[in-house]
Each structure stands twice: as C-alpha cells, then as structure tokens.
Image (tube, rainbow over all chains, first blue to last red; front, side, top):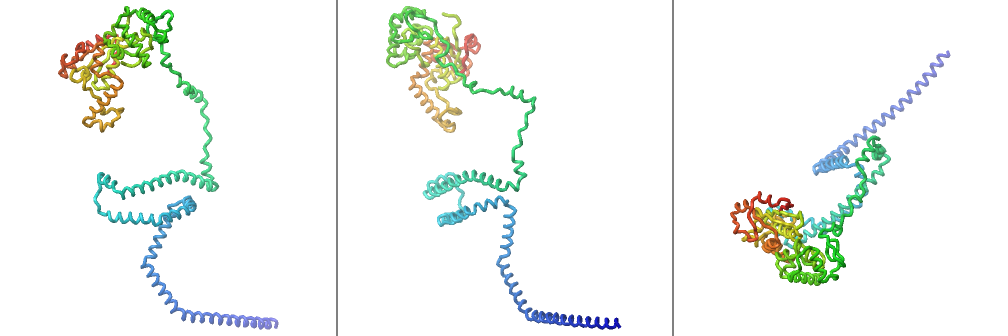
Length: 335
Length: 155
C-alpha cells in the first residue's frame, strides 16, 4: 500500500512537471513565431538597407575614398615604423612651432612668392640653358637682384636657425635621455665611463723618463740682443776719450781734430790729408743734420770723393773707419 | 795687412732684379766691411754684367708665391715690365743705385768681377759684350782656385 501511494504522488509530480514544460514550450514557440513574423516583416527592409549600403560603398569606392584610406593606413604605418618614440615626443614639444610655421608659410606674401615661383617654373619649362655670361647678365636685372636679396636674407635666417638648432637638438636629446633614464637603466650603466685602468707598474717610470716635463721657459730663452754681440773691430784706446765696444766714439761731441788725428794713428792710417778732412767734415755735417752716420755710398756722393779713393783713404771698411775718425757712431745701411 | 783676412766668393747665376741685387749688395757690403770679395757671373747672371742687358733687368712674378700679383695675371704681356718698373721705383726711393752703377761701385771698392766662360760661349757673348768692370772670363776650375779659403755664396 505504501508503494501505491508513493507511486500516485510521483505520478502527480510528474504530471505537474509536464504541464510546466508544455507551458514553457508554448511560450518558446510563441516567441519563435513572433520572431519569424518579425523577420518576415523586416527582411525586405533589411534587404533594402543592405542594397542601399552596398551601393553607397560602391560609390565611395569609385570615388577613391578607400584607396585614400588604404594609402592613409600606409602612411600611418610608415610613420609608426619610421619614427621613434623620441621623435614623437619631440613632435609633441614642437607642435606649436609647427603650427606657427604652417601659419607663417600660409601668409599671403609667402604664398604669393610660392605662387609666382610655381608660375615661373611653369613658364621656364623648355627654356634655353643659361651660360655663365647669361647668369651674369641676368644678375644685372633689378628683379633678379631683388630676388637674390630675398634669397640671401632667407638663407641667412636659415643658417642662423641651423646654428641654433644644432645646439638645441643636443639639449633636447639630453633632456629626453634624462626623461627616459629609469626605463633604460642598462644604457645609463654603460654610459658611465669605466674607471681608468691603472698603468702597469713597470711601464710607469719608463714613461715618465721618456716624457720629461718641458717648462715653457725652455723655449723662451732670452736671445742675445744686437748690442750684446761680441765686439768686433780694432782694439784701440785713446787717452782722455771714451770709446764704445766697437771702437767708435761714445760721444760725438767729445770729438775734435786732435781726436781725429789720434784715432787715425791708432788705426794705422797714413797721415790725414786734405781729402781725408773733406770726408770727415762731410761725415760730421751729415750726422749733425740727419742723426745718421753716412756709409760708403753716401760719403762718396756727398763729399765728392770717389768710392775707389775712399777705400784707399780709409782702409778696410771706409764707412766704419771714416766714422771712427770723424767721431760719429757706426754707420748702418747696406750701401 | 793682418793675416787671415776674410774672403767671400759670390756666384750670381740669375739675372732677375730680385736675384741680381742680393748678389751685388752682398758683394758691396762685404767690401764695406773690409772683406775681400769676388763675384762670378754665370748663366743668366751674365745679364747683370752684359752691356746690352744690365739696364733692362726684370723681375719674375710668375711662380713667385710672394709676389703681390696672382700667378694667373703675372703671365700677361707687359706684366714683367710693369713689375720691374715698380721694383726699380721702390729701389730708387730707397736710394739704391741702378745695377750698372752698383757694378761700377763694386769695381771701385775693390771687388773683382768675373764672367763664366762656358756660359758666355753658350750665349754667344764675348768679353767686349760685357761691362768694362768685369776683370776676366774664367772657367769653373779657375773659380775654385780663386775662391780658395773663401766662403761661397750662391745666388
């Protein structure tokens, strides 16, 4: 009995489940039918939409939008592969400058120049090759001159900018390196200079021996100046008269005829003659007037005594000998 | 005379103004300093003692890196004349006598001037074509005999 009652209760539960299932099935079927109906209604519309969309795309394709897009993608690709993150960072820093440049380039004056240049290029198509003469000739044209002036001004600015740019670029990369330092610890380690290697012990004293420290003083040794040259000339001494190291009178004012005679004797000259005195007088006069002792040529021209005679009258070195006798300083000059 | 007088032998082998004058001035200065001196004129140096050429010595600007005229221009006709005149003018300003007078002075001051025999034969010159101040025409061997004990300067 117990089992039958059990069976009955099981059956009841089963029937309830089936009933629930049927209800669910119905709702699912209902949904399905509703969807089918919706699809049936929507299909023509979707078809229409698809068709219109395809047509539109075809039109766009025809117009080249997609080619443009593909090309654009290529450009983007190239930008991505061709530029480093550093460049992009720099780009960010320079956006304002780029915009300023663009603005500057689109100023009417600049555009007018560019336009004119373009037209000139078009006009010049098929023009005659120009020779140097033609170039020179053209440079006389006022317009060409103005153009040259403009180009020179532009070039000057470009040059200045390039000069500045060389400096700022270095700064920029340095700054960037600092910014990126934490992520590039490896680089940072390698960039620190390795500690200097100690020289082998044996080599050190040898090197020091081979390269003795040269003091600048070694190159600056005082050369003997002209006045310090060893004195040349006959060793003579006259009583009561001061002579310089080369045997000339130290003071021209200390001279008198007596001194001349004494000097001539000390120099082993023959007795002074009339012609001697003529030469001596002229020499003293010349020295008094110009402050320079006359040498052979001047003596000869000025005193009227021939060169040959001078050599005979004042042996060895006529200029010097005459100067000694005349009590004037050593003559200079080459003639 | 004292013993061991200094002696100088100068060989003048070029005839340009800038080459003749150093020889002449050195010779003259030697005499002025009481040094015995003789000058040996050879090859184009003979121009300096040749009657027809002594008054027309020129200066060579071509291939002369210290000349004020660029080499390209220095080769133009008349440039040599012009340069010579300019140099002569500068020398006149300094009171430097012309070559002919320098030779005369040299002879008077006791310097001895010699012509080179071989060069004279080559240039078809005879003793009478040279200035009267030239003492003799000698050979290279004679030169060595003369220059014994002398210091030799080659210009």
